[in-house]
Length: 106
Image (cartoon, rainbow, N blue to C red; front, side, top):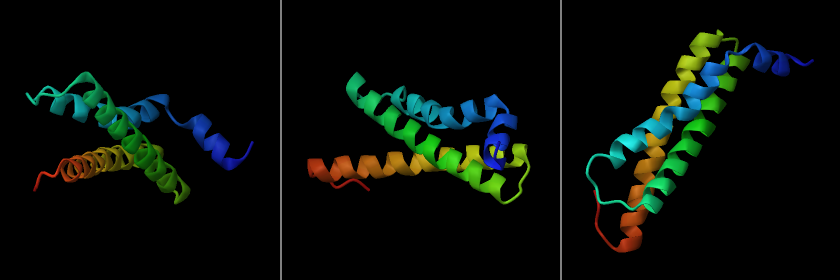
């Protein structure tokens, strides 16, 4: 077994779950804030944030582990980057939608 495979086998499963769920909670909170969004719009935003948080969070986690960080430190860093990445992706998506609709959003 290679070192990377052993690291993944030793990693607590809850770290992977927390990193993947970081974007989902933020978007569901925004969806309940009172905006008139259809279920399709909410689903697109959730998939975007979920994908962005999963990709960026797991990339950061693996990069931190590759540089010798501890599992919990790498997990915490991955979660923080996952939340930030999901927020950035959501903001960029909102700006793209406003530009597409011809609205000057700031």
